[in-house]
Image (cartoon, rainbow, N blue to C red):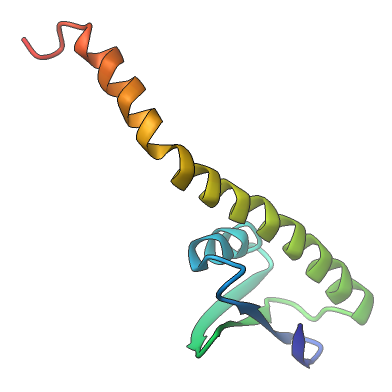
Amino acid sequence: MVIQNDIKLIELKFDKEIYDILAIKKAAYKFSDIASFKFNNNGSYYECSINFLSEMNKDSIERFKLDFNNELLDQDLRVKINNETSEIKNVIIGYAFSKTDLQN
């Protein structure tokens, strides 16, 4: 998955058929206190350049990649579940508000 690895910069790529860009961005946002992120659309992959705000040793970078992948899995599932359940949520919300006097 890693295509470049420095002390302050790593680049990851994610297969578009597996990961949604929204999930990747949400995962990145969680780590915005320790790094900045830049995204590129490269054919069948999204490339993510991660520039750490302070120098990281190799062990810290490896730990970051593990944590990022776990967060990405979490966010990707949240996006998929939201997409799969949005219609029923809208029906439930519409029904709930149809029983109130908010329209008057």
